[in-house]
Length: 180
Image 1 (cartoon, rainbow, N blue to C red):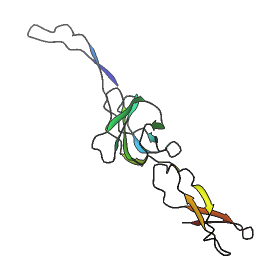
Image 2: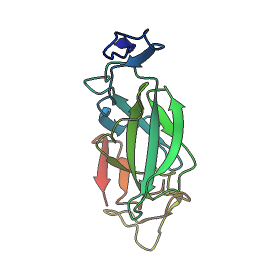
Image 3: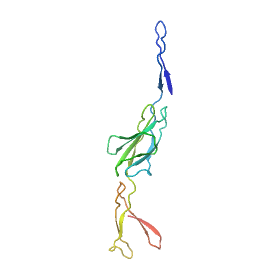
Image 4: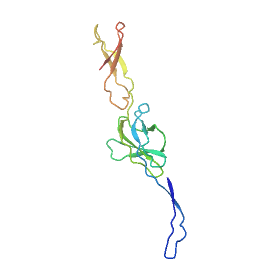
């Protein structure tokens, strides 16, 4: 809320005229944004999608925008990625695949920036490319076993491949999967 003020002085003879008036906004910084989290449908090895909700109290003046900052997990200081941002969800770009990043967001109202939101840590990664060069290994393939070889994906999505899932159909018992 805005308040206007003016002052007059008094001595033994009486009161002066009023001073010029000033208007002061009675507000404070807002609460920090809440529920900062990853948006998997946006996140890849080179970018992270973030979403959040506004804090509970806007400080008495509407939120103007948000400032998104991040750092690598091993770093000490945050880097500001974007200011004047009003987009939610928001995308941080130019990241290095396979690196864990810590993100925070601040809200800005007419008074200034809020404290940081709670941080969230996200791996810059995505689904890997498909394995390549699938082939029969004749020296292993027998009547009751099949030998297979393949090469790992060219791009692992920024995260090490954990395992492989092999699909097969034996034409009698239907389709099945096995995990290696």
